Length: 219
Image (tube, rainbow, N blue to C red; front, top):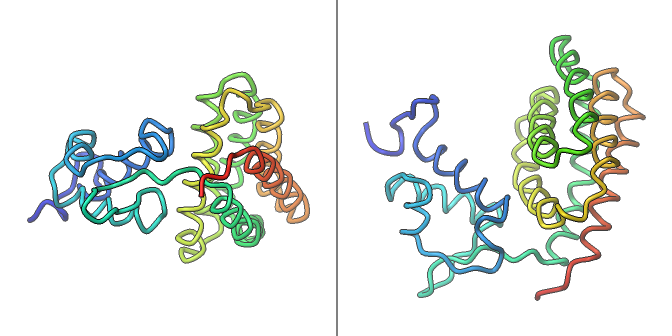
């Protein structure tokens, strides 16, 4: 059994573990946008060997979080207004489909989980770390409930890019409003309220668009 297929204690491959650990570092800006980094540094940060880390780098590059620079190594992709504008343009269409299908297809247990999560998100209006953690849980529940793996794959890298944007503005967020919007989205999907889910999502996307407008254009 090689390093790529061997499973960690959490039941995931080392390549998946490396991807998860490095994606978190990138999304939370612990690896700063625009910074240069060597493959060896990423191996040290993940605590995992070269082969799985290279596989993770390939996925992160395809997702737009890392850029491979010939003869220079790797660069953490800058937060560019032009890139994020296009990401949000695509996300608006695809995520509407996801929340509609989640509202239509969610199993009873998933609806109950969404209702419970809505209350927790709304209560996190003064706790930034809790809000980010619960928002990620909301994405996971919606992905499961929509029951369309191709749609989930298409949205995965967009969610990572937009999470970077949330973290970039974390000190200036209207956290109370963000918590209410995300809680409202969870509740609407749980209730099978397609119109309400689309409305809540559109408001969240509008907040993201406002954050993008505030970015300096880097290229």
